[in-house]
Amino acid sequence: MIKKANEDIRKAASEAGVKLWMVAEAIGMNDSCFSRLLRKELPDDRKSTIFQAINKLAKEAV
Image (cartoon, rainbow, N blue to C red; front, side, top):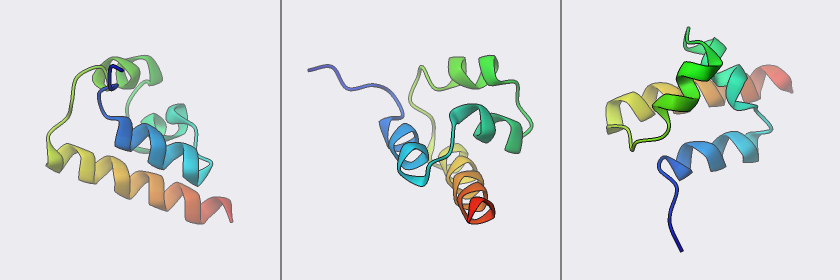
């Protein structure tokens, strides 16, 4: 089975009930650009920023 790039980001967003377009908006990016960005594995510092945005959005949704 082929593993998708940035599967950890996709899973974290899904489990938090956050859509990827919402994450894109939160980090100041167009959703189509964000989708393209996720096609290749990101460095840890970039992932950290995205995980922070997911956590913030999840807390705001509660």
